Each structure stands twice: as structure tokens, then as C-alpha cells.
View 1 (cartoon, rainbow, N blue to C red):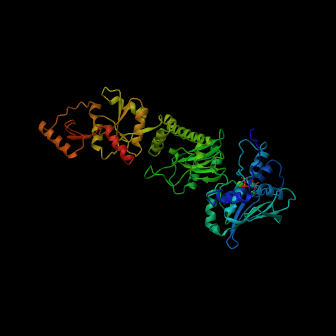
View 2 (spheres, rainbow, N blue to C red):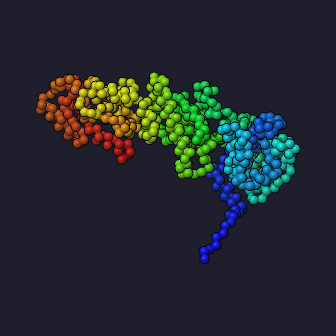
View 3 (cartoon, helix red, strand yellow):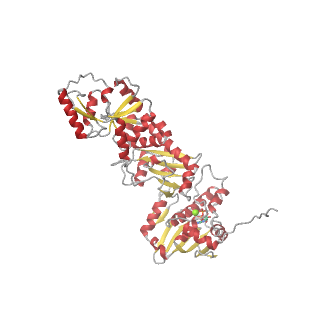
Length: 542
Ligand code: ADP
Ligand code: MG
């Protein structure tokens, strides 16, 4: 006989689960303020919605959230004039952990909401309990917007017991009063609180007042339509985000609602100094205008991590682990979307204003190169607008450059050779020598160029890159100049031997006489592949 199977209900012993929620919900304790202010924003926006649906006919008035603290009483209070709660609602929404009133509201009114209207922040029904990360006791005084509602007071010390009683409150709305625990008194500080509010709440959609000032901009530019914005609007928003940075080169306004929701503005920064150095400023990730993080590693393609700006998406899972984020299909789609938009924008600039594009290209180049190296789809788009710059400061597309050098190259090989220098000063004699022979030389002197050259060689048909001091220069162009050496045969041999002994490096070739007499009598060259192997191992620190 087979064992009888039973079905049952898993029960949660709240006494045990409560401390776990309190301690491990968020690693960062300052998050409590983000959660409670978000709830106040939700309560205010719900009231606005009810008014617009005709379900609330009293005056809405000014909907301002205030955050205040009292150092002596050791309290922090968050007050709103939102929908408030009845006693029954407190029992339902507050006493039931992980029951989200926000989700319930969105469900209930989903037929009335206009398409794409998704601005209620709450979701998991856990945020409120983050208050207990910093408070030994939490008090709620709330009065529902409903006519004739009785105000109520709820108090809980973080155990599973609470007290609910009638209270006095003149106006509709909610006060959350946190009685700060001894180990969290750092939060009873004006600058600390202001800092946290500015970090998370700078762009919340309802005004938030602290210390007599409103700390937020309620309609940041990414929530508006590009058609309603001027260049100055974008620049002033940039200054707002990164006060110390030079003016950005250009920007991209992101706006998708299918198959995921995403808005934002990405800026191409002017990178000064060492172009490869990551600057402190980063892209900021928001969800419904609430700041979440500036660790956007998995949301933004690696090669675009140096961009600046804001991304806002309610579809990015926020309270989950990093490995989950990497595997999330929305995140992957977002990655692809951003890459495509950036490539399209660059192409648009190139096509519409080539001179302007060239003027900015030294700053853009790093993105194009890094992008081409790390993403084939990006390379495919970028190959039409990626530029190379020669030692005279002239820019060419890859196709243009190929045609340009092919016309000059007189050797019979199928390969078109792109000569380049990695150091204009050090390799000056070689560069000048090549130029005298009518050969063009590219400037490839940034740290990423060695890799970029390899990638281009692999992708471009019948194209080889040779550094200007490689041993093939002679073969490329028949200069037509007879090289009549001023040295005798014997002198040449002795000179060659002397150089070889001194250099003592088999990878170098010494030749005397191969160059016209008005140039260097001796040239030292190394085969391209050997030099590249050396460069690569130097780069990877071997
Ligand atoms: P979530 O915001 O994800 O729904 P929370 O734990 O943050 O979950 O809050 C639980 C519920 O408590 C909210 O959905 C809301 O119904 C209610 N609530 C919390 N704060 C307020 C407030 N200031 N005004 C009105 N209702 C609130
Ligand atoms: Mg919430």
C-alpha cells in the first residue's frame, strides 16, 4: 500500500519571522525614510486619483509631505494629506505583513486608470516595516478621506502586539511617528536626514518639505515629452545632477512602454583628463521617481557605464539579488534597447552634422571603440560612423580611409595596409618618413587602441594594421627615390653589426641604407606581430 498523502497549510510563526523581516529586509538602514516617504507619496497620489475618478469630491488642497524631527523627544515624523486609513484599513494594510494596499489599489482601479499610468510606488507590502530597523516604537495617527471618518491611533513596539484606539486629527491624512531606538540616534540629525531625503527623494512627484524647504523637483525632465524641452532644460538638469562636471556633449531621451517601461535621459559626458578613468558620477537608477541605486552594472551595458544621467523603470526588479538581476529577461531587453538607442543617436549626429560629430569625436571615440569590442550588434551599427584620425588631425570613416590608402599603395598584395603610430613623438622619424613617401599614418595612441586594432583587423576585409616602425614600410610604396647611401659597403656592415650588438635583441631588424639619404641612415624595425605580442602582454601586466 502506498503512503497516504496529505495536503496542508504552511503556517508562519510571526514571533520568529518578525525579527527577520526587521533585520534583513534591507541592508541599509537609511532606507526606512525612502519607504515611509514613498508611502506618503502613494497616499497623496491615491487621493489625486480618487478625485480625478470622481470618487472624492471635497477639496484636495495642497498635498505636501512634511518630514520633521525632535532631538529631545527622539522622534522623526512623516506627515501627509493623502487618503489616510480607517481602523479597518489599518488592520488590513498595516497588521497584515506582506499585504500591499498599493497593489490592491492598482488592481481595483485598473479599468479607470489611463493607459501607461503606473505611478503608485508600493508593491510588496513590506516597506512599512522597515521603520522598525530604526525605531523602538512606531505610532500611526491617521484619518481617512471618507466623510465622517474617525481618526485612529496605532502603536506597536516591534513585537507582534499592537494597540489600536480612537484619536484626534483635524485633517485627513497620516502621521507616522518613529520613536528612534538608541542605536539609531544618528538619524536625529538635520544634515543626515536632509542627505537621505535628497538622495532618495530629489525627484518625488509630491512636494516634500524638510526644515522649511521643499527638497524635490516634482516633474523632472525625464517625465516630460522631448517636444516640450529645450537644450537649456537638458543642460540645467545635468548641472543639477552633476554640479561640478563640464557641459555634456549631447544626450539621449529614452522613452519606451513596450515590452517594458523605461524612461530616462542619458548624457555623453565630456571626459577630461585620463579618458579611461571611471569618474565618480554615475548613472542613477530610479523607480517611479524614487532613487534606487547608482550601481547600474547589470542594467546598463558595460561600455556605457561611463555615461551619465537617469534611468527610471518600474520593471527592474529592485529587491532581488544581483545574480537574479543578471538573468532577468527585462534587464537583458533594457540592455539591448539602450545599446541600440545610443548607436542610433551617434549615427544621427554623424549623418546630420558631420563637422559637429568630428569636433566631439575625441570624446566619443572611447564609447565607440569599447562598444565595438564588447557588442557585435553595436559594432554593426558603429562601423558606418566610427572614425579614425590621422596624424594631420583629419577624420575618416573606415571605408573612406580604406579608399584613401588603397589609392596610394603600390604593392601588389591583396591586403590594404593601415599604418599607425602609437606615440606621435617617439615615432616621429618613422611617421615623417612614411609621410614623405606619400603614405598616410593613423593616430592610435589611446590605451584601448591595441585591442580595437585587433578587432578591426578581424572584422574588416583584407585590411592589415602595421605600426609605422614595422619592418614592412619599404614594401608598401615604391617611393621612386633611388637610395644612394653615403656610406661604403664596409661602413654599412660595421654600422649594422654595431647596432645589433648594442641592441642585443633578435626581434629587432637593423637596416642601413634602405632609407633615402636625406633621412635616417639607420632604421630599427620589429615585425608587427612580435611587437603586438609584447604590447598585449605589457597591457595585461605579464
Ligand atoms: P506597499 O507600499 O508595498 O503596499 P507598505 O508596507 O509600504 O507596502 O505599506 C503597506 C500599506 O499600508 C500600503 O499599501 C498602504 O495601504 C498603507 N499605508 C502605509 N502608509 C500609508 C500612509 N501614509 N497613508 C495611507 N496608507 C498607508
Ligand atoms: Mg510602501
